[in-house]
Length: 486
Image (cartoon, rainbow, N blue to C red; front, side, top):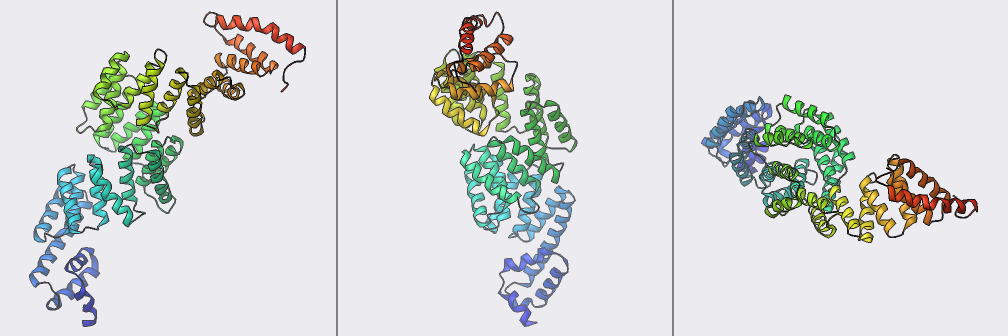
């Protein structure tokens, strides 16, 4: 017996007490041995009795907690803590139950107490860090979560919380990519959670890779079809694709599974705003009990969408200088009338959200309007490496190269446009001119004729006249066998 008891005698009081929480036959055996031999341990008999009572109450509380009887569980957790004030597990579970009931202030206090009692307990540190992220207290949250990841590099919960933090802080693409690499590694291992796949999707969305994000969301929902956050991601991706019917269906599913009303109201507001139903969207936003920054941003977008005057948009911007939606609207509003002004707004929007392709493309278009063609070519080519099917980027790159007389480079851009939109007249005209300058007369003739078939006789009268003047000369050159042959 003494041989068996010796290790127990070397344990700290906290370690011995932690054995009480493991439950089952093993726990009862350990407790009996300790109680029989209490005179050999540096714990008073009364302390053992108190610990015994606290653990029994704690186990009863956990049983209620598992059944969803949170209020009753909290009462018992508190009773256990009153008996045994230094009981980190009870503090943690009580805090988790309080968080589930939306009692954030009390929950934070409980998580802090658990961390205080067990400073290196990564579970409590992660829960506290996640809660602080949601409160917007990112500095302290980052310190906690980074410590957890340093201790446990593959702690998925901490990585998920850090992902949320990085997204809210609008971290640089390099930082987001580093996070994505870490999470991708975890999803490649056995049994990744739905929340891990969802966090991966979040990073892919932030980096502009919506195709990969859609696949990650599908994987998340395959694990847990009722996972609310993944459903919200699927709905937002559907809105981005213009598939409003699918977004509405997902909103109905979220309501059916009793997802947080605020989340559903925000989604409905986003759907209504996308359809131009701004009054309805505002009603959903007003119905939110605790609207966050996303709701405030959407409200700003709606206000900006209702305003068409650039001067009014600038007044709104004066009260919210970093509102990217307003900057994007002003970028478009001034593009033709004041290219330099548009360029400044586009640059600011792109700086604030470098991963938002719309801002980047707007910036490129503004460079073209401002006749900064070389800069436009560099930017637009970088965009097309990541988003090869962006029509606006192709059109502006083609224009910039054309204006620089770089016809050989402009030609494939105009060919891409004619292939994608064969009924649009404009690209044929510029493609024909590019072929003409490159002495590819047969191709020039074919594209001039395509343009004449599609062009509006009134709106494009001047261009049509220019082509009609050029065609006889072009026919002569072709007849003489001049020009390059493809």
